[in-house]
Length: 299
Image (cartoon, rainbow, N blue to C red; front, top):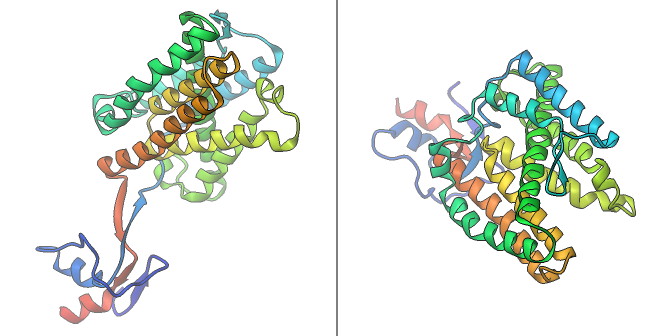
């Protein structure tokens, strides 16, 4: 409608925005004159869901939780078990599309700085871990474990809970990009709770506050997946964290060295997700204020 002002942000500074539209975008330039431009995500991941995909997601989560507590697995890679839920979660990823979940040349190019950093950081983490705590096969086992947890708890569970929340709220549950913040946040919190209560994590807890590291990690990794739609960066990040943690316990890294490696991986992931979102056009500039009276007055 015309003849009003729409505030889409909290601030309304008088200075003209840097990078505001010019040239042919005369109406946009008039309507946003005096607004501050900020970057906002264009919804969550751009996936297309079906009922069959959600059935697969539910099966993957149920099988992983149940078999983790029962101590069942498909076998071991090195000293680490392979979850029975991995085939289901991989099938889910294939149903959505391997390119859609980040395994494509275009996605790699958007995350290119992260890929270069990972090519440096992963060998350092592997070297410290293998030198002090295990073998290269054990390191491969940590990779499989990290991939399994990301596929189940930062992919399948996010889809399952987010779609359910969106459906309850009367939103388009088939398209995460249209869920809105409520379903996305609900999915992240639920996944963080369930991930924190896995038996391997519970065994490391000595008080309720001990859940915070696991829940916080789940929130950060889940946010990166649900915003960018890319799985491989969080798998790499999780692998580095696992290697640094196990390597530190065995004396391969000092406490400071472990902290530096973990911070580099996590900060690198968040910064790279921001950059990748800008390149993909899902993190785009929007004005804090749109003044429609300026457009109607010029007509």
